[in-house]
Structures are given as structure tokens and as C-alpha cells.
Image (cartoon, rainbow, N blue to C red; front, side, top):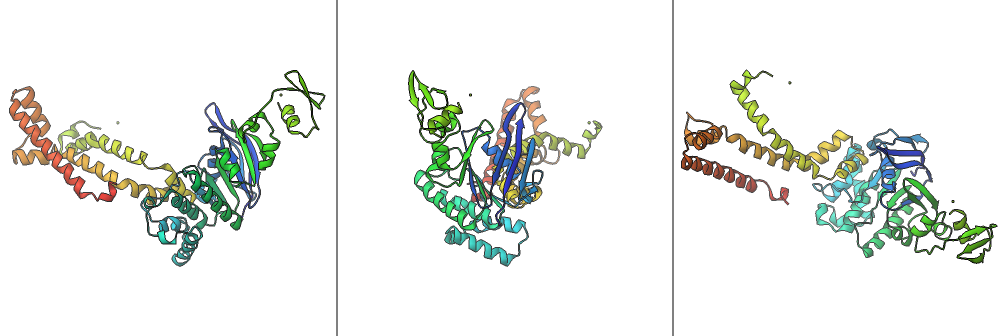
Length: 418
């Protein structure tokens, strides 16, 4: 069922910067509202506050009169289509669409029925078993829409859903999106920075032009084009020519010395003119302490590698899972962890190879009575000046490490290295 959305004095601060400044806005049930404005105007921040991914600094968000300002994303019953689509790359099209239903513990039979309905709606039944990377941009976009609609959301949020498509495909997908939105009578809020996208596609019931975190004007396309509330709106919507002048007596506009009579106070020029004003050290001598020391020495390699793996995962995938009803911990284990596991495995192999320097490699080279490889190399190089022997040890160690690395590269499935 469609829901009404109300924003009251919605504010977001980042330090001294006011990203959204006291935004008040109403969206009627079944309405498609487009937030339009240049980069940095606050429209995406507004959308993310509505979705629950950004906490407001002030104000309130209500959905059908229910205050959802402090609710986590997975409890807001909203469908979200991200600009990057945020499809789970390790799941098929069918499982992507079913994800939100699974998070809501929908029975398997009902889940399968709903997924089939959604794939039929977006005309992707033949692609149900494919992975996202095997789809075109337009097909990926339709999967994202089907996934968002499958959970029966009360509100649909679209974050620049057409920006990654070429012009021809953009028009086709925009028409399909509008038809689906109208047929389902689903309240929708869409964000775009492209005024031509919002206007030429004629998707919106109303447009909201934003600038510097504030609303400049709200209205239909023709209202913003024919009766702009400010020179900014006039210049941003369409291709307008602005003539600087001075209004006199509410009926005469003086432009560069010329007097222009206005037809009335509701005229375009008249409207534009009037709006122009801390561990014991002896532990290190025990076998357990040696293990701890090796682990602590090599741990940064694991942490740094794992960090780079996690940073390489699109955060919007986790947000998408939360938006589909997954709690943060469940979103991590179901989406982020499977994607990070191959990289973490590689990090473990790296640390294992480094650890072998203190155990396996000395055993292989020196027998039961052995020296640690690193101190032995240091002794031969720096004290005995036996450089040939030290160099030979170094090459053996390097060769062993390279062999293990190549073996790991062969053993790790190719699909994890794609």
C-alpha cells in the first residue's frame, strides 16, 4: 500500500557545513517526486536520511504519520535502487530478487512465487540463473528495481537510477520505470542531478529544485519552467535567458534604460523580477610466547590486506541488504563476508608464508637442530661475512615463498580472481 511521506525541518550538519537546512516537504501517496539540483545541493543526503543510512541532525521523518526518524533502515519498509544498482555479485538474479523476502522469513513457496512475478514484470525470466556481471547495464537496473519492489515497500527510493545508462537506453528504462510506478501506485522519491533527465522523460508528478541544502521551488514541470521562483531555478530548468532589470510600480520593468510594460503581476518577467531581493616480557621465552610474537609480527599484514579487501567492497551492497530488511549483522554475514572471504583467505596464506620463515623453512634446511632463518641470515651476512652462504639461503627462502605463492594462485578458484 502506498504511503505518504512528510519531512519536517529535516537538517544534516557535517561539522560547520550545513548539508541540508531545515527541509520541509510532503509527498502524497502514489506520487513520484523528483529531487533535482546540482552536485552538493543536499538531495542525496536527504534521500539517505529518508532511507535511514544518514542520521539527521534535526527534524523529523514520518511515513503515514509514523515517526521513522530513528528507525534503522531494515525496519522502514522502503525499497531502494542505488545509482550503482548494488546487486550482490555472488548471487544470481533470482537470489538477488529473493534476498529481501528471505530476510523477512517469507515461506519458500511464497518467495518463489513473488520472485517469478517480479522477473516477469521486468521481463528477465530467461536470466534468472545469471550473475549480475553477465547482464547489461539496463538489465542490471531492472534487477535492482525488481529486488526493491519484491518486498512490497511502502516507499520506493531511487538514487540517480538512470545515470549509468546511455541516452537511448535511459529513455526506454525511464518509460518502463514510470509505467511500473504508476501501475503499482507506489509512492516514489527519485534523485537526479540532470535536469534534462527529469524534464524530458516527464517522469515526475512534481519536481523539487534544491540549492545549498534548501528548497528553491516545488512544482510541476510547467510551473518551474514558466514561473520560476528565482533566477537560479530559471537558469537551471531548461535554457533560459535572464534580463536584469528593475521593477517599477509593479507593472513596468526597466531594462537598460528601456521601459517594458508587463501584462500583469502573474507574468513570467514580473514573477522573476519580484523574486530578484598493556604483559610480561619473560613470556617471550616460552613456546607460546614465540607463537604470540610471530602472530603479532605478522598480524599487520593480515589486517592491512583484510582492510583493503573490505574497502574494495561497495558499501551500498550492505546498505542495499539493510534496505531489504536485513539487520546490520545479518547483512554483514550474508553479503559482505562471502565477498571478503577470498581476500581474507589470501591474507591468511600471506601470513602463513611469513610464519614459515620461523618454523617450516628452518626445519627443511637445517634439520632438527636448526636456527631461525632470519637470525641465521643476519649472522652470516653481518658477523661471519659469509655472503655466498647467506645469499644461497636467501634465494632458497625466496624460491620457497614464490613456489607457495604460485601454488596458492593455482589452488584458488579462478572465479574468485576474476
